[in-house]
Figure 1 (tube, rainbow, N blue to C red):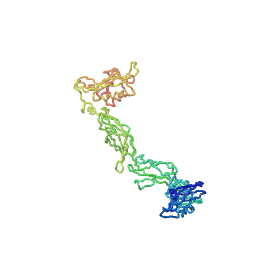
Figure 2 (cartoon, helix red, strand yellow):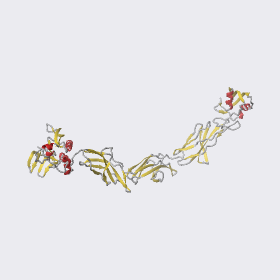
Figure 3 (tube, rainbow, N blue to C red):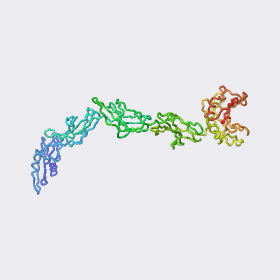
Figure 4 (cartoon, rainbow, N blue to C red):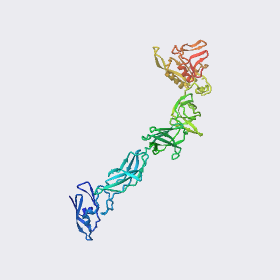
Length: 556
């Protein structure tokens, strides 16, 4: 037996309802207090607990205002309801009402996987447990699971994909006699075990008329259905059924270049011979567009002309070439090519001494309008006043004299005002006559051709032949009446002893000419002759008169 004694405050707490724990079991004892008049307040309270029984003794002090018969009610515990573990008693319960359990609320059911559903509900205070009922009809449901008082969720597995399941939940308590006291059933909630919703990871153009859709694989799916529309929120139609669950891409063909299309996907699984579908994926948009052109090369073809080459773009109707003097600057159209099969274009109008940057883009005509590809990468070319082999006579005269014709200087003094001396690296033989070594020569030429001559000997030096040059000459004043281009610094002689000047079989100057035998003799089809020709210098071969050492800009 356990005695509990207290004064006025203890009695008041007892009379308003206290939960005690039995010394002999884990059963919670709930005492519902009767109404007590404020005119009578217990001065001392004794509570005795033994054998699951409660005995209460009080000594009362009457209030001057009046008395009540509360003592009898307090002394008689049998007059009040007694509940076991988990009782949920309404706030207005009195000693004459039976034990009640609240209704479960907040029930929700959601798809967990394609064969399972998760049931959740709001917790009640103090129930002994819960029971979950399920059925494929609202009118026919049976208990499938009993949960402990601490559980408020349950995953129901082994279900059939696509079938609607109905659920309800109720709580229960256990009274002093060991009987279950049930609360009302919750409202019915329903859900369907569903396939995982596919996620489209990308939708992008692979050509001017193709769009490739890629989505994440749904493990449990047997296949997928692809839908397309020209509107984001309506008009979707099935365009393909993918019959393999592992296939995660689809290419939509024959699309219109530049037009926006919208796509969504849903997965399916076969259940009893029928397809059960997931929800639709989120909608994604894409346009079919021409591929980005690949610019291959930009070469300087002449003093003001560049040759731009690119890889053909399938489906193109034509191309635009754009040019700028700054890589990140403003680009302007420099050429328009109206042939979709074209792979190169000449661009005119460059200025010497400047570097230009080039990019291109293709276009395709759709109903009279041009639909453009992305821009290509950027390549550059520098126009550094180099001459070229395809210049006309007038262009050469403009380059050198600023005139449309050749001008002979009237005197040595006048000529030398226009000359420039440069240093060039060449190959020559060492003292052993076998080993080739690098040597530096000086050469005086017209200042307006000096950059070109510098480039010529740079390429000869870097060439595969490593052609040896033991002597080289340029400007030489040969008299006021001479018409030689040497007088203007426009002719170059190389290895004159081994590359003679011969006229009708008579050697005029030099000693020999033995290309292929003597290493200093210049072959007419060798690297030196080709490089000279590339930049507008021709070898001195005029019928029966051949000056093999001689290369001149105007060909005289």
